Image (cartoon, rainbow, N blue to C red; front, side, top):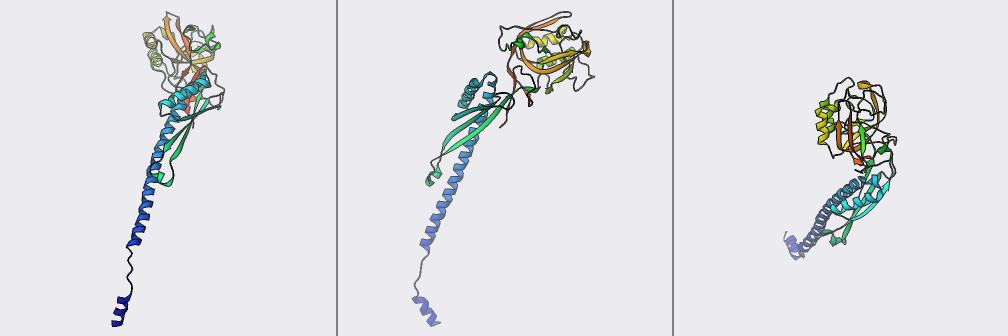
Length: 315
């Protein structure tokens, strides 16, 4: 034991304080770097969400003008992008069913780095992309129960959005001599409830508020009798003067009276400016208009285009 104590007493003592300091310095550097990376990545993620919102808004806005051409669509997309944070904008067009029925908007922004500058990362590029479609509706919501023949002169000349081009809709003789006793008013619920009877109050409600469900194309029953003479319909039309309505467009009528069937092939926007009703006649004056409406876009390319568009974000 004395020898052991003597040997220990003579051995050199080595301190580890310096090693701990070095290790702690390395650890703190890594920890701060990791924290900085997390904070910067979180900031870039928020920036990415913001640019995506800008791209979505710009694409949806541009799609509303696609029916007027690519130049107005691009201009409107740029306007909405500027109102939603801006960025470097790239706009392109494509086709899904109709020519130029797709608009794609890419938004790029340069975002600064903060903590990751310690590692030589000064900025990052954030890019977001969105594609919207403007399609012709195969189904439409908020339809009014007033029919228009596809051979109407204002539809043939595609005279849309021009109040000087007065369109006259004759409710008492919608088929040009056929379907006697059918007054151009539809039973919009006849597809889901063929045996259901409707009155002027329900027709007036559909004119004022539109039919709530998305209606498909197809055969619809005529509404019975000259209901346009009722106060329900007159008041409803009066409430909608100067406002856009969506009318079904028919190709043929078969049968007569309340048993008549209208073959609905599409939809058209119409703005009523005045109307008259009599004991057995009714007319609505106004003009046809291009409208963006709620509904389901056609995927087949077979639905006639009467200036109505359904806007959807597809990417």
